Image 1 (cartoon, helix red, strand yellow):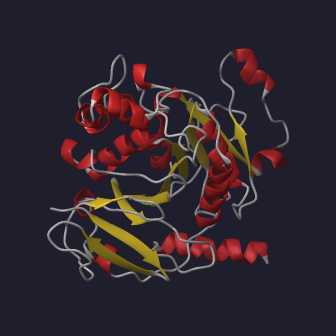
Image 2 (cartoon, rainbow, N blue to C red):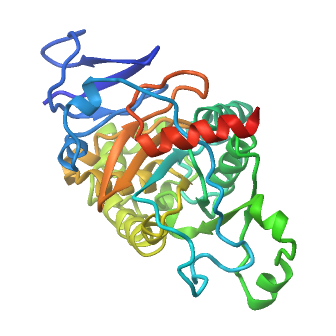
Image 3 (cartoon, helix red, strand yellow):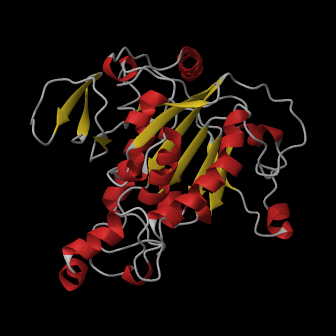
Amino acid sequence: MAPAIFHQAMGTMLVRRFGNVSDSQYDSGSASVRLISNGFGVYPGSLRNGSSSSDWCTLHAIQVSGCRSSVVDPIVNPLQGTGNNSQSKSDETALTLLRHGESMWNVKNLFTGCIDVPLTEKGVEEAIEAGRRISNIPVDMIFTSALIRSQMTAMLAMTQHHCRKVPIIMHNESEEANRRSLIYSDETKKQSIPVVTAWQLNERMYGELQGYNKQKTAEKYGKEQVHKWRRSYDTSPPNGESLEVCSRRAVAYFEEQIKPQLLSGKHVLVTAHANSLRSIIMYLDNLTSQEVISLELSTGIPMLYIYKEGKFIRRGSPIGPTEAGVYAYSRSLALYRKQLDEMLQ
């Protein structure tokens, strides 16, 4: 099937296909979907994971909630657990995925990979706008890659969150680092959100291509070869990682560290990169290796999943805190949004 594209406008969703049919009318079929700038896409796997096509075609939306009142104690490494189960488990939790804003090498069209470069001014604006879009979606924990563009995006986004809690990076490099970063005020702990950084969420390592201009590299090696390095599933650039290798580390980390937090009732924000998030989405939506290579993720566009009864259900990309949104929120998230509004009044 030719890929389709979802566009957002005033609480409705339009589908446009490319290929044999152009500019078609709204379509509820199961065609593959690409993520593009200012857009959001869903693959057939989303409809296989417990949601019906009406989830994506009937766009009755109510506003979603803000940050939950229960927060992991930043004194304790959340990946090591607290040793008790006192926190009540929710029957559903929110997982928000966010690719970092535009980086200084994105704008130069350079292979970036694991090179640690910051955001551009536009990237900062994208991160802030993403924060506005998710300002009413609950966040109890944040996972970011070890790269600054991902961490900047998370921090800037949270400046816009209506829960008004402060994200605090966990330092577990050593026992001494952990001891020095302890918070002793219970009140302050309640107003904090732990941020865990992990190299496993880093961008795919592009090996000897890192630092080279993409266009010039295509001219040197040929467009077909460079396309194969960039878009195939199991082919690695010279001394670099294939998407398959990147996927193994990112998905393993998701299963071992992030999913247990969702199971325990915590709402999670993950800020990472095109290929590490592409890998996680492949896992969440049961995409094939052929489907995932067509998946494009724009910088600064958040994606929401609901985790319920062992299934991940894709809900879409929020369009703003004051608008109805383009996806159907769950009842419990809507109720929490109401509580948040009352708190802010």
